[in-house]
Image 1 (cartoon, rainbow, N blue to C red):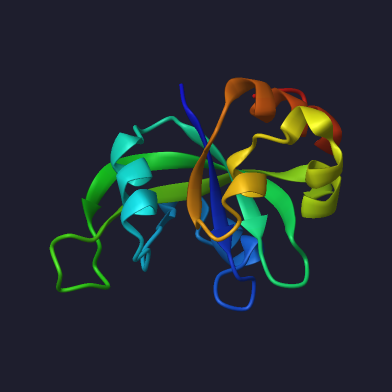
Image 2 (cartoon, rainbow, N blue to C red):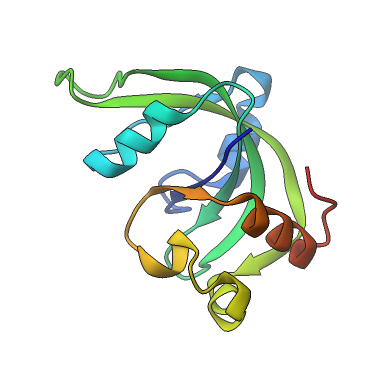
Length: 140
């Protein structure tokens, strides 16, 4: 299993909206960055990801699951753009802020710290376990 982080502006697509989609999930569309697209091409159903709110909140707020592998993005006529489908799994018992992540030396190499603008990014197994612990969630 691989782990990921999906960034979203809460006023565009929020955790609550993701949860409201239920088991149907939602296409993670609109990504127009080749590196982020390439990460989505590596995803397989069953992979888990953190759902991260950008803007003023800047915090990991929930866990999502990849439901479908990369496929054409329905919001683009350009075949170069692909996306995956994800569904909400559970909210975190406690949000983990970017400030907390940056303050923890064990997370200094995390993509969220090093590549702050990248909307879809990998998370290592060690980072996953540590953030789950910070959030009060048993590692999934």
